[in-house]
Image (cartoon, rainbow, N blue to C red; front, side, top):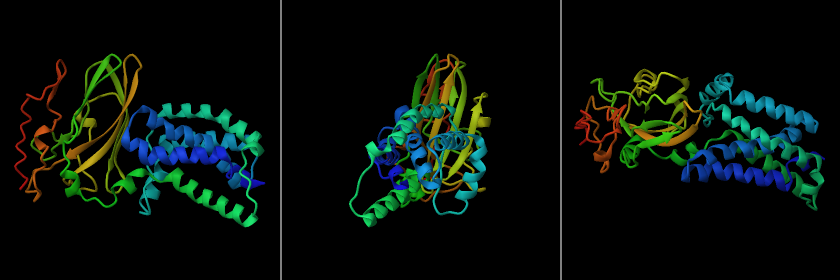
Length: 317
Protein backbone atom coordinates (compact mmCIF):
# COMPACT_ATOMS: atom_id res chain seq x y z
CA UNK A 1 0.00 0.00 0.00
CA UNK A 2 1.20 3.49 -0.89
CA UNK A 3 0.85 4.95 2.59
CA UNK A 4 3.78 2.81 3.84
CA UNK A 5 6.20 4.97 1.85
CA UNK A 6 5.43 7.93 4.13
CA UNK A 7 4.01 6.32 7.22
CA UNK A 8 7.21 4.63 8.35
CA UNK A 9 9.83 5.30 11.01
CA UNK A 10 12.68 5.96 8.56
CA UNK A 11 10.76 8.67 6.69
CA UNK A 12 9.60 10.38 9.87
CA UNK A 13 13.10 10.42 11.37
CA UNK A 14 14.51 11.86 8.13
CA UNK A 15 11.79 14.52 8.03
CA UNK A 16 12.45 15.52 11.66
CA UNK A 17 16.18 15.82 10.97
CA UNK A 18 15.48 17.98 7.90
CA UNK A 19 13.17 20.37 9.76
CA UNK A 20 15.32 20.50 12.90
CA UNK A 21 18.45 21.27 10.92
CA UNK A 22 16.84 23.96 8.72
CA UNK A 23 15.12 25.77 11.58
CA UNK A 24 17.35 25.20 14.60
CA UNK A 25 20.80 23.77 13.95
CA UNK A 26 21.76 26.03 11.03
CA UNK A 27 20.82 29.07 13.08
CA UNK A 28 22.71 27.84 16.15
CA UNK A 29 25.89 26.53 14.51
CA UNK A 30 26.03 27.43 10.80
CA UNK A 31 28.94 25.20 9.79
CA UNK A 32 29.81 22.69 7.04
CA UNK A 33 27.98 19.86 8.81
CA UNK A 34 24.68 21.72 9.19
CA UNK A 35 25.08 22.93 5.62
CA UNK A 36 25.14 19.33 4.37
CA UNK A 37 22.83 17.65 6.87
CA UNK A 38 19.65 18.90 5.20
CA UNK A 39 20.85 17.58 1.85
CA UNK A 40 21.55 14.16 3.36
CA UNK A 41 18.16 14.03 5.08
CA UNK A 42 16.35 15.32 2.00
CA UNK A 43 17.96 12.85 -0.39
CA UNK A 44 17.26 10.03 2.06
CA UNK A 45 13.49 10.64 2.24
CA UNK A 46 12.87 11.99 -1.28
CA UNK A 47 12.65 8.54 -2.96
CA UNK A 48 9.97 7.53 -0.44
CA UNK A 49 8.11 10.78 -1.11
CA UNK A 50 8.29 10.29 -4.89
CA UNK A 51 7.22 6.66 -4.68
CA UNK A 52 4.19 7.63 -2.60
CA UNK A 53 3.24 10.57 -4.81
CA UNK A 54 3.52 8.87 -8.20
CA UNK A 55 3.02 5.18 -7.33
CA UNK A 56 6.20 4.35 -9.19
CA UNK A 57 8.73 1.59 -8.63
CA UNK A 58 11.54 1.84 -6.09
CA UNK A 59 14.24 1.99 -8.79
CA UNK A 60 12.43 4.72 -10.71
CA UNK A 61 11.99 6.78 -7.54
CA UNK A 62 15.74 6.55 -6.92
CA UNK A 63 16.51 7.66 -10.50
CA UNK A 64 13.99 10.50 -10.20
CA UNK A 65 15.68 11.65 -6.98
CA UNK A 66 19.08 11.76 -8.68
CA UNK A 67 17.74 13.72 -11.66
CA UNK A 68 15.73 16.16 -9.56
CA UNK A 69 18.44 16.85 -6.97
CA UNK A 70 21.15 17.33 -9.62
CA UNK A 71 18.87 19.74 -11.50
CA UNK A 72 17.94 21.59 -8.31
CA UNK A 73 21.58 22.10 -7.40
CA UNK A 74 22.46 23.44 -10.86
CA UNK A 75 22.06 26.96 -12.32
CA UNK A 76 19.34 25.61 -14.63
CA UNK A 77 16.80 25.64 -11.78
CA UNK A 78 17.27 29.34 -11.00
CA UNK A 79 14.50 30.49 -13.36
CA UNK A 80 12.00 28.30 -11.50
CA UNK A 81 13.07 29.75 -8.14
CA UNK A 82 12.92 33.33 -9.41
CA UNK A 83 9.46 32.87 -10.92
CA UNK A 84 8.11 31.20 -7.79
CA UNK A 85 9.57 33.83 -5.45
CA UNK A 86 7.97 36.57 -7.55
CA UNK A 87 4.55 35.22 -6.53
CA UNK A 88 5.26 36.23 -2.92
CA UNK A 89 3.73 33.27 -1.07
CA UNK A 90 7.04 32.38 0.53
CA UNK A 91 10.61 32.20 -0.64
CA UNK A 92 12.56 29.24 -1.93
CA UNK A 93 16.27 29.44 -1.37
CA UNK A 94 19.11 27.21 -2.41
CA UNK A 95 22.86 27.52 -2.93
CA UNK A 96 24.67 26.13 -5.96
CA UNK A 97 27.33 23.94 -4.41
CA UNK A 98 28.18 20.76 -6.30
CA UNK A 99 29.70 19.18 -3.20
CA UNK A 100 26.08 18.81 -2.03
CA UNK A 101 25.88 15.89 -4.44
CA UNK A 102 27.74 13.76 -1.90
CA UNK A 103 24.29 13.38 -0.35
CA UNK A 104 23.69 10.72 -3.02
CA UNK A 105 25.52 8.37 -0.68
CA UNK A 106 22.23 8.17 1.24
CA UNK A 107 20.46 6.51 -1.69
CA UNK A 108 21.56 2.93 -0.87
CA UNK A 109 20.01 3.42 2.57
CA UNK A 110 16.80 4.70 0.96
CA UNK A 111 16.80 1.66 -1.31
CA UNK A 112 17.24 -0.61 1.69
CA UNK A 113 14.27 0.97 3.46
CA UNK A 114 12.01 0.82 0.41
CA UNK A 115 12.91 -2.80 -0.30
CA UNK A 116 12.06 -3.69 3.29
CA UNK A 117 9.31 -1.17 3.91
CA UNK A 118 7.22 -3.57 6.00
CA UNK A 119 9.94 -3.62 8.66
CA UNK A 120 9.71 0.16 9.05
CA UNK A 121 5.96 0.57 8.61
CA UNK A 122 3.94 2.30 11.33
CA UNK A 123 0.73 0.33 11.67
CA UNK A 124 -2.43 2.13 12.72
CA UNK A 125 -5.61 0.30 13.60
CA UNK A 126 -8.13 2.52 11.85
CA UNK A 127 -8.12 3.45 8.12
CA UNK A 128 -9.31 6.98 8.92
CA UNK A 129 -6.41 7.55 11.32
CA UNK A 130 -4.04 6.09 8.77
CA UNK A 131 -5.24 8.44 6.02
CA UNK A 132 -5.10 11.45 8.34
CA UNK A 133 -1.54 10.66 9.46
CA UNK A 134 -0.42 10.12 5.85
CA UNK A 135 -1.96 13.40 4.67
CA UNK A 136 -0.33 15.30 7.53
CA UNK A 137 3.04 13.80 6.65
CA UNK A 138 2.51 14.74 3.01
CA UNK A 139 1.67 18.33 3.94
CA UNK A 140 4.64 18.81 6.26
CA UNK A 141 6.95 17.12 3.77
CA UNK A 142 6.09 19.61 1.03
CA UNK A 143 6.68 22.52 3.42
CA UNK A 144 9.97 21.03 4.63
CA UNK A 145 11.25 20.49 1.08
CA UNK A 146 10.60 24.00 -0.22
CA UNK A 147 10.32 26.49 2.67
CA UNK A 148 13.30 28.29 4.15
CA UNK A 149 13.95 28.98 7.82
CA UNK A 150 14.82 32.63 7.10
CA UNK A 151 11.24 33.66 6.38
CA UNK A 152 10.01 32.42 9.72
CA UNK A 153 12.94 33.70 11.72
CA UNK A 154 12.82 37.29 10.43
CA UNK A 155 9.32 37.90 9.14
CA UNK A 156 8.47 40.35 11.93
CA UNK A 157 11.67 42.40 11.68
CA UNK A 158 12.29 45.66 9.90
CA UNK A 159 15.55 47.24 8.74
CA UNK A 160 15.84 49.55 11.75
CA UNK A 161 15.87 46.53 14.10
CA UNK A 162 18.52 44.84 11.99
CA UNK A 163 20.69 47.96 11.86
CA UNK A 164 20.62 48.09 15.67
CA UNK A 165 22.63 44.85 15.64
CA UNK A 166 25.26 46.06 13.18
CA UNK A 167 28.78 44.74 13.77
CA UNK A 168 27.74 42.71 16.79
CA UNK A 169 29.80 39.79 15.44
CA UNK A 170 33.48 39.77 14.55
CA UNK A 171 34.67 39.67 10.94
CA UNK A 172 35.68 36.37 9.38
CA UNK A 173 39.45 35.96 9.36
CA UNK A 174 40.13 32.39 8.35
CA UNK A 175 42.65 30.02 6.86
CA UNK A 176 41.33 27.85 4.06
CA UNK A 177 43.97 25.32 3.16
CA UNK A 178 47.03 27.28 2.09
CA UNK A 179 45.02 30.47 1.71
CA UNK A 180 43.53 33.19 3.89
CA UNK A 181 40.28 35.11 3.54
CA UNK A 182 38.66 38.12 5.15
CA UNK A 183 34.93 38.88 5.23
CA UNK A 184 34.00 42.33 6.64
CA UNK A 185 30.97 43.10 8.78
CA UNK A 186 29.93 46.37 7.11
CA UNK A 187 29.97 48.19 3.79
CA UNK A 188 28.90 51.76 3.04
CA UNK A 189 27.52 52.22 -0.50
CA UNK A 190 27.54 56.02 -0.40
CA UNK A 191 29.55 56.58 -3.58
CA UNK A 192 32.68 57.99 -1.89
CA UNK A 193 34.89 55.26 -3.34
CA UNK A 194 35.59 53.67 0.04
CA UNK A 195 33.91 50.48 1.29
CA UNK A 196 31.14 50.89 -1.28
CA UNK A 197 30.93 47.17 -1.99
CA UNK A 198 30.51 44.07 0.17
CA UNK A 199 33.46 42.03 -1.01
CA UNK A 200 35.59 39.13 0.10
CA UNK A 201 39.32 39.70 0.37
CA UNK A 202 41.81 36.87 -0.07
CA UNK A 203 45.44 36.14 -0.77
CA UNK A 204 46.77 34.42 -3.89
CA UNK A 205 46.28 30.98 -2.35
CA UNK A 206 42.51 31.22 -2.65
CA UNK A 207 41.63 29.85 -6.06
CA UNK A 208 38.00 30.93 -6.31
CA UNK A 209 34.76 31.83 -4.61
CA UNK A 210 32.47 28.93 -5.47
CA UNK A 211 29.32 30.60 -4.12
CA UNK A 212 28.68 34.18 -3.02
CA UNK A 213 25.05 34.40 -1.88
CA UNK A 214 23.39 37.34 -0.09
CA UNK A 215 19.81 37.19 1.17
CA UNK A 216 17.33 39.64 2.64
CA UNK A 217 16.72 38.72 6.29
CA UNK A 218 13.15 40.01 6.23
CA UNK A 219 11.84 38.36 3.06
CA UNK A 220 14.36 35.55 2.65
CA UNK A 221 14.78 36.60 -0.99
CA UNK A 222 18.12 36.25 -2.73
CA UNK A 223 19.45 39.73 -3.52
CA UNK A 224 22.87 38.72 -4.87
CA UNK A 225 24.18 35.41 -6.18
CA UNK A 226 27.39 34.71 -8.04
CA UNK A 227 29.24 31.45 -8.58
CA UNK A 228 32.73 30.39 -9.69
CA UNK A 229 34.38 33.77 -9.09
CA UNK A 230 38.09 33.54 -9.96
CA UNK A 231 38.80 37.28 -9.88
CA UNK A 232 38.30 38.16 -6.21
CA UNK A 233 37.86 41.90 -6.56
CA UNK A 234 35.30 44.57 -5.68
CA UNK A 235 33.87 44.26 -9.21
CA UNK A 236 32.50 40.86 -8.18
CA UNK A 237 31.02 42.06 -4.90
CA UNK A 238 27.55 43.17 -3.80
CA UNK A 239 26.90 46.92 -4.18
CA UNK A 240 23.78 46.99 -1.98
CA UNK A 241 21.47 47.83 -4.86
CA UNK A 242 18.18 45.88 -4.65
CA UNK A 243 15.32 46.83 -6.97
CA UNK A 244 17.15 50.07 -7.82
CA UNK A 245 17.26 51.03 -4.13
CA UNK A 246 19.88 50.96 -1.38
CA UNK A 247 18.62 50.83 2.20
CA UNK A 248 20.19 50.64 5.64
CA UNK A 249 19.79 47.06 6.78
CA UNK A 250 21.66 43.88 7.61
CA UNK A 251 21.95 41.05 5.08
CA UNK A 252 22.78 37.40 5.55
CA UNK A 253 25.46 35.74 3.46
CA UNK A 254 26.60 32.26 2.60
CA UNK A 255 30.04 32.04 1.05
CA UNK A 256 31.97 29.01 -0.17
CA UNK A 257 35.63 29.31 -1.15
CA UNK A 258 38.26 26.89 -2.45
CA UNK A 259 42.00 27.21 -1.95
CA UNK A 260 44.70 26.41 -4.49
CA UNK A 261 45.36 23.16 -2.61
CA UNK A 262 41.70 22.13 -3.11
CA UNK A 263 40.44 22.81 0.42
CA UNK A 264 36.85 24.05 0.40
CA UNK A 265 35.12 25.83 3.26
CA UNK A 266 31.72 27.39 3.81
CA UNK A 267 30.93 30.52 5.83
CA UNK A 268 27.65 31.95 7.13
CA UNK A 269 27.22 35.39 8.62
CA UNK A 270 25.68 38.86 8.49
CA UNK A 271 26.87 42.12 6.96
CA UNK A 272 25.52 45.63 7.50
CA UNK A 273 24.68 47.93 4.62
CA UNK A 274 24.93 51.55 5.79
CA UNK A 275 24.43 54.11 2.99
CA UNK A 276 25.34 57.46 4.53
CA UNK A 277 24.36 59.62 1.58
CA UNK A 278 21.62 61.17 3.74
CA UNK A 279 20.48 61.11 7.38
CA UNK A 280 19.21 57.68 8.38
CA UNK A 281 17.05 58.91 11.28
CA UNK A 282 18.14 55.85 13.24
CA UNK A 283 20.00 55.64 16.54
CA UNK A 284 23.63 54.63 16.20
CA UNK A 285 24.21 50.97 17.13
CA UNK A 286 26.24 50.45 20.30
CA UNK A 287 28.54 48.08 18.42
CA UNK A 288 29.20 50.37 15.44
CA UNK A 289 32.72 51.04 16.69
CA UNK A 290 33.55 47.36 16.22
CA UNK A 291 32.72 47.37 12.52
CA UNK A 292 35.26 45.80 10.17
CA UNK A 293 35.36 47.48 6.76
CA UNK A 294 36.41 46.02 3.39
CA UNK A 295 39.29 48.49 3.12
CA UNK A 296 40.88 47.26 6.38
CA UNK A 297 42.76 44.44 4.66
CA UNK A 298 46.05 44.14 2.88
CA UNK A 299 47.52 41.16 1.05
CA UNK A 300 50.51 40.83 3.39
CA UNK A 301 49.14 41.33 6.89
CA UNK A 302 45.49 40.47 6.37
CA UNK A 303 42.87 42.28 8.46
CA UNK A 304 44.22 45.32 10.28
CA UNK A 305 41.78 47.28 12.45
CA UNK A 306 44.26 50.16 12.74
CA UNK A 307 43.70 51.04 9.08
CA UNK A 308 41.53 54.16 8.85
CA UNK A 309 38.32 53.10 7.08
CA UNK A 310 37.68 56.68 6.01
CA UNK A 311 34.09 56.53 7.23
CA UNK A 312 32.63 58.71 9.98
CA UNK A 313 29.09 57.26 9.83
CA UNK A 314 27.70 60.59 11.01
CA UNK A 315 24.40 59.83 9.26
CA UNK A 316 22.95 58.32 12.45
CA UNK A 317 21.02 60.41 14.96
